[in-house]
Image 1 (cartoon, helix red, strand yellow):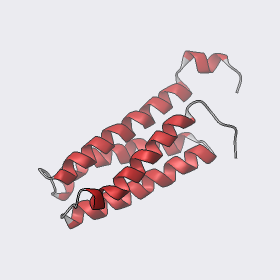
Image 2 (tube, rainbow, N blue to C red; image 1 turned 60 degrees about the vertical axis):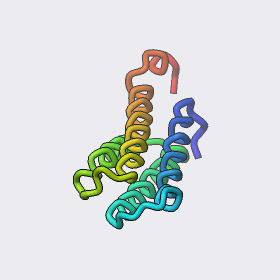
Image 3 (tube, helix red, strand yellow; image 1 turned 135 degrees about the vertical axis):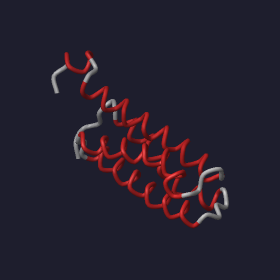
Length: 119
């Protein structure tokens, strides 16, 4: 396990969003089968990727979370569960996950304070 990075807290937030998303079909009694399967599968991938990013960081993990977040935003229309509670949950969690992944990628690759300190 590598040492704790300051950006790791963003991975914790993504992990919490993934866990909330995984529990949301039960919390909000989602009725759409497509929505439940999509939310469970995507949230499991987000949680797994976030745990991997905490344990051993690599850029691909954040890029994967970024793509999964985008998928959560477009999946209600792609899978046909638009205008439901599941749509609101999926879009909200997708925005959070996308923002966290993009912010971490920016902090790791483009932050001027980060580049001045030795790794």
